[in-house]
Length: 142
Image 1 (tube, rainbow, N blue to C red):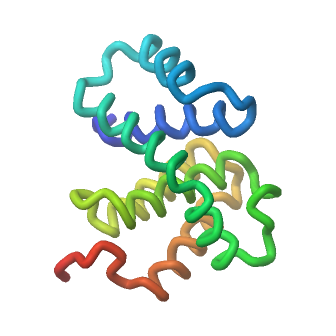
Image 2 (cartoon, rainbow, N blue to C red):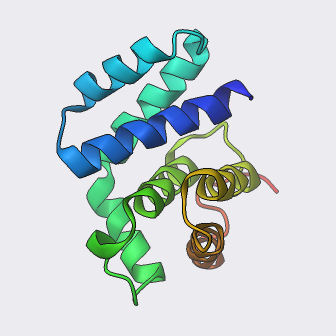
């Protein structure tokens, strides 16, 4: 598995635990990183950036999710789906070296692996709706 894909999976696990238990991000990340000693330094850095970024921007990210999935209150979404969307939206807006297509594809892949049968379609739909409104969220060259 690629380094960033593993880092995303680890970040998702951390965000899931933080979201469901209220444990501190430092505690959760330290525990998960201790269990995954094979993740290279660049993966560790990326996972930490994702977790800290999602936590820092969670209200803004949740507002975006609510706008593009109005029939589902964010707090009622499955924890996995909610955090996959938060991570992808954070990547789309704040991580310059992740192309739009990669961020969306990785989110859908995480949804296939960790979510329900309907998660990939739901995640793709919300991200697609966001990108219709913001086709170039980071000012990328096409």
